Length: 605
Image (cartoon, rainbow, N blue to C red):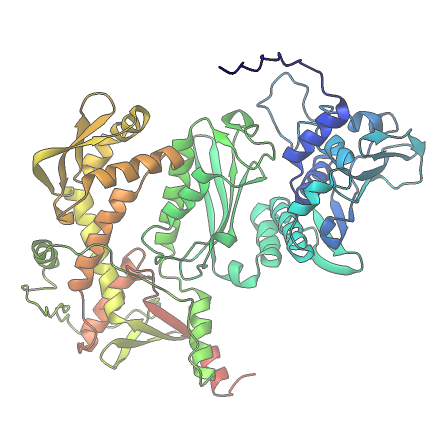
């Protein structure tokens, strides 16, 4: 029988400052972009109105940040390099955070893994301090303008293993540029430059004007003119929480979530709750695989949000997350509905490009795949719901508008007056300043869909009782989350109740969905609630069926329409929210201005 190795009691030791700083650097300084973020945020907290950043080799060999802020005295410099030394909080209230930084770890962490030099001047003479691999030299006098210059060379030379985890010089430079752009969006009244030694990468001069004017100008420079031309102003407030910014029209969507920027009290964050709310706000107007573009600012009392939940302060925790999520979702949905008739410039630009080129110019690729097929009875019910537009149901319904008396089309009608129908699918309408081309099937599909949703909201979703309730076993916390929204699910036709510890009984399901894997749906909802605090999964399934019903019960391509019918369709589009996109997120109409048409024929330069 072998002898067991005797247990050796570990000895508790106090880590020296250099080791502690290198550990802190691993949390705070992940890559050169992290260092730039910390230094620029320090400059902003110092009240800088202009910040110039210079890098070399993707920030690996040089990062220099020059600001015109309040500066530091010779006595301040050694303290600035001490861990947990800061002027931004006094420790009495850790939730009352009005600054970007507050831990006092950035400068000592950077000094522990690189060669750091800080030159600063407050009101009197300038001073300089150097620190290499955590070892600081004495403060010495130095000529300097008002403000601070922080120069970091040879990042991670003291921890060479970290260099192996860095990406290419180009990728690191791009990451730094992204950091500067996000901070430039947060502070439009501050001027920024980013240079790679002699090459200017990014420049944004300080913007003037009120909140929206300055932000509008800054986003035009940072996000591009296309974004701001296709963006809608967002401004709402609820219970002390204000939401402002710009959200792009659904037709200006992206293939990835690269144009989504959310700020909390001007702090750039990447928060699952907020990105989920942004996605839910565009629910029903974007096709699968497309992502909204938006720059949103949430401002609230600092005590309402905890920013001290992540070393890099990239995540936050709200005291009332449901309030914030509800504000974002409802504001976006209402704003998009109000602006639904405004066509994205990208669609018109693609149309013009198609006229100018022999090659077909396509709008961003829209892909849609129907996941749910409604039962025939549901389609029949949808068809009957369209009266007087539809008189009965058949495999090929006529789905036509009833003729209306000849009437004069208002001169200011946004979608104009119908002049022709081409290829028995597209309506050509004349407006006061151009023309509109309408996809009759896509347009009426959205109108029918909105009507079905309104009826479902008013009367509720019909439920179908299960002969034998389905019991879904869940962890206790997941079961509690799902049961907490039982009333909301019941409104969508899903009736659930508790069934002992850690189990949920499903007694009724939405009749529209036909056969349904209730257990899988309940587990998906539980996952959504755990990750995002909310779930739109069931509503998405119900709406998908309503969408399919609308598709089958709308004006078909290839159907001839009279002038009165076409004008009736245009007028209803003008009255219906979200009529600018069909149920699958594609545009329902395209507008060409008269000036653009004249340029096509060389009448204008």
